[in-house]
Length: 127
Length: 296
Image (cartoon, rainbow over all chains, first blue to last red; front, side):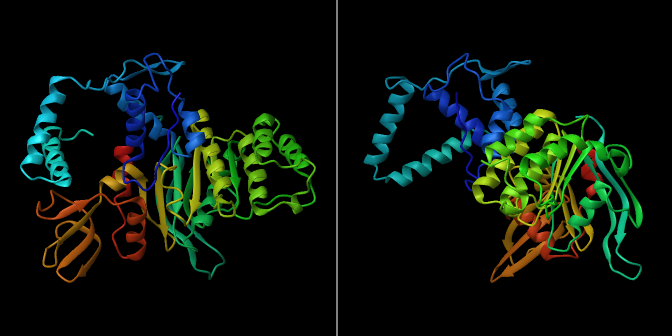
């Protein structure tokens, strides 16, 4: 079972925090396919947030195909989120790129800014 | 969501005494059932008057208010109201108070709900109400209100005398109630931040009038915080508030069309939105009716 922690001052919408924390739990293997998410009632009793916020987050997870709502039973994890393994081609390419950036004299912050900018360009409107 | 309104007001006004000032005037709004509504406004804005009218404990001077599809007096069985001063009988014990609740609400009373709320606060059932702290009294009052299984729960400054832990617990309890039973909850407060995450609907009252009413998400989406050069022209957008500091203009606007792309924009927080409206009493009342139509 996952427990949500809501940070009121993070500037991230509350429902997005629930979506992100669910995905994080999936990536870390704290949630696996077949696991049940807490009911809206359980989440709001613990966090004092509005029930619709939880439902909105669960709908978003459902839309992304990560969970499924079973009528009268609850919301269940449908599939896990795999982390790209350390020896995957994408990771090796990125590794190589980072090495070249460092050789070109870029600092950590420069690289991060560059990476974020490219990320924003290719993944517009997603989080 | 059903189309029923939990509360509907039209040209609602209340004046205390024939020569007294208007506590509330020209109020028109519609609160759909199943919402958790924050009634926000400064002290003396008319929040308590509005809740008392909805509870059917006061009659309007002009206009009309309907509650759960009928007149407030006829809906009283399905409505629970906790006044700001949490009126309880000081000489009764906690257990006697709950028994009174059970006897007065024979058809609807859920004793297990009342018991759980009281037990969670570690209240001794034998304690007299007069020996309880403010927070403990709030707990007993909420136990009475929730055990009645109301369709509409009216709470006037419910959290005012609770410590932060009890506040979080009680808000969690109220949200659980809303999730489980679809209870419409209306709560007033002048601390906006306290309600931001719990409420989905806003009723902003200032100077006895409804300044803003609607779904919080929609109200926030309808406003933009703008940073622009000092000479920027904000028209034709509706300006709620604007301030110039040096070369920079900072404003909260309700855009009527696409904004100038050179301006830096951000979505306001609920608190920023509310404060902007309260600081600017002459800022146009929001398009409450329009927001409502799209919400339903």
